[in-house]
Image 1 (spheres, rainbow, N blue to C red):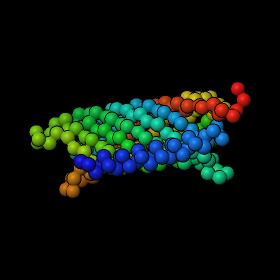
Image 2 (image 1 turned 90 degrees about the horizontal axis):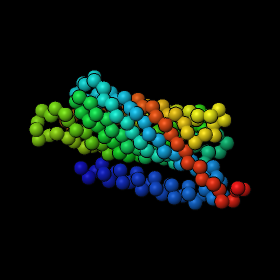
Image 3 (image 1 turned 45 degrees about the vertical axis):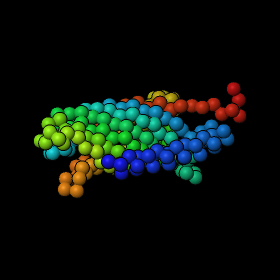
Image 4 (image 1 turned 30 degrees about the vertical axis):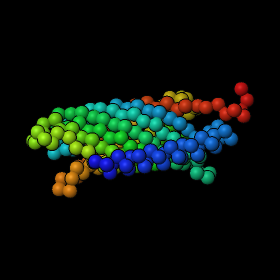
Length: 199
């Protein structure tokens, strides 16, 4: 039970350290970092005990994108995300974070991510009344695209489409199962005025 929590705390600590470093550089370059928040509605294929009925849920989180790499349009960053879905067989929740990479094409901003999560699952019809939920590490990976709402690509608001595959394993003898989440939502980018820029 303690192992997933320790890993999650490690990811959060690294993310906060990177955020602090980026914040120190922001006074010299107003676009050095991009801080974004997002919320999404999700269709989830739970893949638990061969269940083909969908779960429905959503997710929310934040992204911190750093300097572009050299002369490329690639921006490395970090993401924190919480997700939850419910359905006939199981309710699934994840909390975690990890690295991401964005290709900044102006209005269109595709990205990929790799997230290390703490996962919790509730069984809606448990075969054993003493085993109604479980917890484990969950690895998720995927990506998507943000489509900024104005043609110039300068709006704070964007529409987000996102796909994530998760890897769950509840015990040594339990088979691994891989839920798939397809989500749509919105993303908001915070703009901070550089104190050295003109009003």
